[in-house]
Length: 181
Length: 257
Image 1 (cartoon, rainbow over the protein chains, first blue to last red):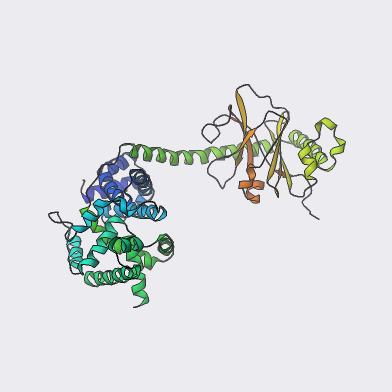
Image 2 (tube, each protein chain N blue to C red):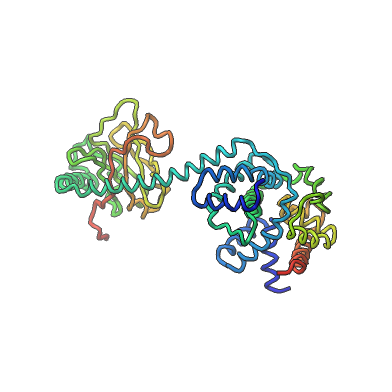
């Protein structure tokens, strides 16, 4: 992976219509974005489709990227996740049950980033999440990593949708309070 | 529980991905229309987005970039197409200013057409367009004379805007073997010409392809005919030379009963 500064430079060149820069940007980020969308969609054909849309979107809106607001990879991941979740909501046949590994992943996300290099922001976020009730923390992480809707989360952890809604709200407000805004 | 909290929770849930399809659409509309809400979404994307660090990279299949490259080339082609279209409009304008000879000829053809609509009995029996007789005189009937130069009108396109029915009459166009004539609708609303289907071998071809378009689009469009491989354009866009083009004009005075 290139450094954030290198990615910012590539995005600027892409905004100016530089196709070679776009190819280098793709090479540097494709595996991360594919990992993100495959985890949510769990079907290679859908993930391929979302990758195309995400990178076309990146090509078209690179000029709107602002390094003061987000890191380049976070910005690109957000674009890919959004497309993947849109598609997942439209395709009811992307079933949660197809993905046993998602559960295993959820089981060990008490500290999903053990041993990894952490940015200061990430350390703060993990600290906030670490203070949540374990079941509620798992809910937030399942939602983020697997792109599950409230209904799917309810089915997954065997609680009513209203409980999920309340927990999500409580977790979000707690995180906001700790992170400060 | 305040309204501000509700907005923040909605923004965070949008970013987390827990909203259903309808709620997502609402949130996306808010992002576009409400700068404050858009800023909340950006904040959550930045903060929660850090979690992506835990996701293992997975190498995508090589064909993914190939498809992205093709779609990007398509975007660039569309841009080129718009330029081509402007050139085509310019040519159409030039044809229209060709002068009196063409105008006179067109007027004669229109007169013949109007006659065919209003008084089909004046036409020799073999030349009566059956569809037109059945339709009767309609106030919203338009006609385009598709021709390359004043001496050789090739096709006459008649459109019933209300019924969105069109009839192409082949006047003097010889068809090379192994080729087909294809009719196109060119409108500034679309980046590419839209196919209205093939012109048949017989004298009259009637079609309903215009049913997909709004009356204003139909009346304002330029119509063009290109020579394509047998069976029509393989790409969905004109591949052969655009041989004839023209715009619709009214067959009757604009005043309506």
